[in-house]
Length: 208
Image (cartoon, rainbow, N blue to C red; front, side, top):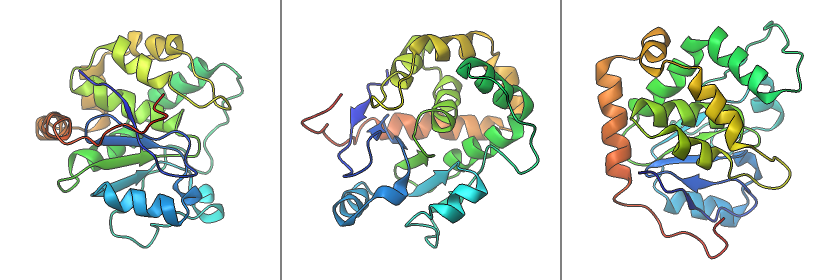
């Protein structure tokens, strides 16, 4: 249903289109060529899920653009997650802060027509979780979601098994209710990804 397609945004190393939903690493890396490629994508909203301090230290080139929304998944004062196990970290975020993920999904659902970008620092963990929940919400199989998650540059390796374990422990319907999504939001997500799949850009020559 979802076939990731690489996008060539120079200096960003983890960008791909999932049919109108684009996932990316830190957009502050974009130079003139990258900004031109970004503009050509016709993006209608940027959901930046980085922490507030990251947005201050590595400001997005779109920070003053009305399309940009900072929807952090971490807040100052959150207890630290003392584990090197990504599954433990992911489950703690998902279990403890459903409303934060809900805000990110609602921002995608309520975006104007056009592709929506979800971005964090490396485009793997926080972006990966938001994208996974969005795809699960519209019925994409867990194996497909995990395969997309596992596409990552060498400096941020990712295992499909990690995402499969996250999704196996999650009742997505109940979770979305706890996160604050309405039936209208879910319908909007389905319509967005369905429409987005019909106007994808062609993959770049070095598509992974």
